[in-house]
Amino acid sequence: MVANCAAAAPYPLSREPLSITLACADAGIGVQDMLWLSWTPTAATGSGLLWEKLCVPDCATGKIGYYPVGVTLSAVRSSAKGHWFSELRVSWQGSRPPNQTPDTFTLMAPG
Image (tube, rainbow, N blue to C red; front, top):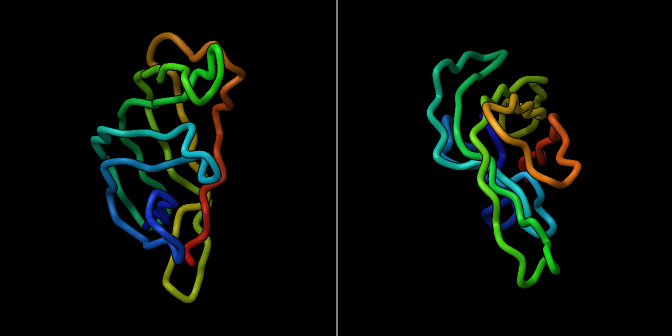
């Protein structure tokens, strides 16, 4: 399961979500249009589009860039709401964002 901070806290857990917001504070980066190829209790893999606010000239008026990525979910943790993936890793399928976008993201815990 994945906790998605796109909804209000407490963050709900979902299986094979179509999108995951990665920067919860400002909703500035995430993955969307997910196609899951494998989903097991220990890992999940798929592909989709990473979107990111490019913040040029600033974050309020800047455009959003889209980048095809492979996605792997791992690092299963346990909570009162159940097990959840705590790490998302992207593999770039083409161009990368001009920002210093990381390859690995820590996912939010469920509420």
